[in-house]
Amino acid sequence: MMTLNNQASDPPPTCTRCERLAIFRKKNQELYPDFFNAPVPSFGDMSGRFLIVGLAPGLKGANRTGRPFTGDYAGDLLYETLERFGFSNGKYDVRVDDGLKLQDCLITNAVRCLPPENKPKGEEIRQCRPYLIDLLAAMPNLKVVLALGRVAHESFISSLDLKRSAYPFGHGARYSVRDDLTFFDSYHCSRYNTNTRRLTPQMFYDVFSQIRRLLDTPERMQN
Ligand code: URA
Image (cartoon, rainbow, N blue to C red):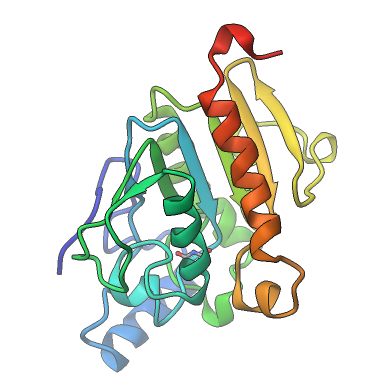
């Protein structure tokens, strides 16, 4: 099986930090022997300025293919939007060998293993946070982080040791979290959110458009 970044900031394939998730992984390895069935590594450009934090792999999406959002319904809008705003090169397909490259951008998940019913427990989010902290430290040019949904939002805020109450989650929220780092929120591009139109493609594009503008503005001209 082709693997992706596999940096030190990725969990080992046999990670046992969360007992429930390790047991669930073993069960899925038996049920779906052809699936990736391991913590899904981050995908993209470690020297990029833009980091996207999702929730967790989906059973027949990222947990099957081994690449964040790849094969997940949520990936259709996400990868289309990345292309639209110039953060990718090549065509997204539901395969890790589609040749797609991210430009100036990296995608990770707050929880790297598949959680039952797509719902990680608080303790599992906490157990996985060291990988997010390591990833943030390993991206030397990072300028913008986008959280997809509340779980990603809260995990990122905690990874910087910031007070959650000072940074409430909200679609379109934008915070300066460090001199050199701007943090954006979007509703997660999940099937539920897009089908109910809690998140429309235009709402998603509007967030990316702000991010593109920020990254394209020379630093000396930023506020
Ligand atoms: N697939 C992922 O990799 N992450 C998500 O947040 C949703 C689907």
